[in-house]
Image (tube, rainbow, N blue to C red; front, side, top):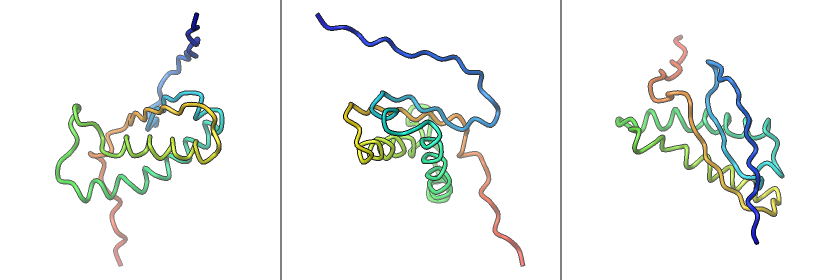
Length: 110
């Protein structure tokens, strides 16, 4: 008879500065710390979001989702695999901030 794993459930009050939420299986957390995951995602968001905003005149809708969330999840999974995880890696990246309505940093004027 198979046994179902017991999920870990934690309630955390969101802060106004929260940008994303990562839901993942043990295959990620076995080899990457939460701090390293945040750094990994932050670096990629700072690279992806300006390019997506500038290259697309069409904002994602609720049904289409942010175009980079899937890319971020796939890259994070590849990172866990490169770190040698021995377990399944399933990741969902949820962007909590509306990056598409933010203004791009203005270029410095001389």
